Structure formats: structure tokens, C-alpha cells
Picture 1 (tube, rainbow, N blue to C red):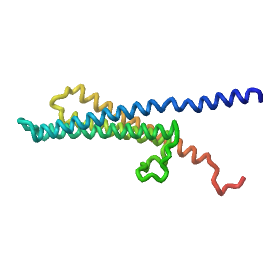
Picture 2 (picture 1 turned 90 degrees about the vertical axis):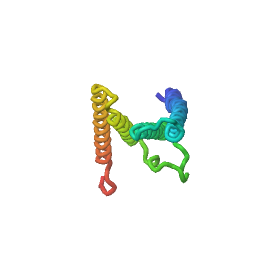
Picture 3 (picture 1 turned 60 degrees about the vertical axis):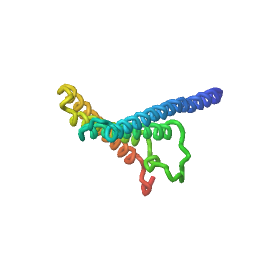
Picture 4 (picture 1 turned 180 degrees about the vertical axis):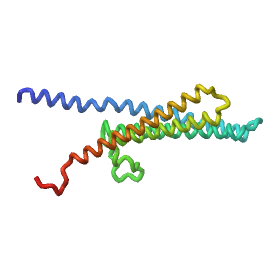
Length: 185
């Protein structure tokens, strides 16, 4: 068995190294975030142009829909940041940010469970914005579309609740399985 040890060690080192294959994926998400910044600025410019420089006045509802669209883009960008930073920190390598004044507070206690809950909460927020836009613009939507958006939103809510419940069960189980400091052996 000891003759296999060097081979097993190299295999384990290679498997551990394979986490770096995810780094290009996070770089790709940063590029996607650049696309969202571009879309945000473009929509903001259209809003400003239509408010101040257009010959036709836009309604309050139209402004509200554009602003909700801008909020949607910001929430998706926040989701991307959570995935990029949290995923990299959890699955690839620790970020050396100790003492950095801009270090996100949530990063100090991120793990796969916390990241899933944060992501599901962000997705619910994004879905809520879409649903609000749909209700505001309901006159231009089919009843079928509205019903499916509500169903999908409810599924997101139930999924997030289920993930939070499972995470809580797992956390409680881990805490119960650890010996207490005062216990005698």
C-alpha cells in the first residue's frame, strides 16, 4: 500500500488543483457584469433624455417601469458580485482582504450554505421586481403570462424557504453532533 502513496498524493494534489478551473468562469461573470453596467447606463441615459430633451412627455408609469428596470439591473449585478466573490472565496481560493476597509461584512462568514441562501434571497428580490413591473404594466400583459410569473415567483419563495430550512437542519445537526467543551470523556 505504501508504494501507492506517492501516486495517490499526486492524484489528490491534481484533484485539489482542479478548483482553479473555475477561475475563468468567475472572470466571465465579471465580463457579464460589465455588460450590465453598459445596459444600466444606456437605460439611464434614455430616461434622462426622455425626461428632459424629448418633445413627447413620458408618464409617471413609464418612469416607474424604467426605474424598476434599473433596480432590476442593480439587483442582478449584486447577485453577480455575490456569486463571483463568494464562489471564488468558497470554492477556489481565499481572498486576502483581511483588514481591507471595503471588505464586505458577509464575506467573513461565507460558506456554501450561506451563499445559497443569499443567492436565493437575491433571486426572490429580482423576481419581485419583475412581478411588480408586470402588475404595473398589467394592461399590456396576458392573464396567462401574469399567472405564470406569479407561479414562478411562488416557486422561488418555496425553494428559498426549503433551502433555509435544510440549512438550519444541517446547522443544528452539526451543532448537536459536536461534543460540548464541558463534557467529560
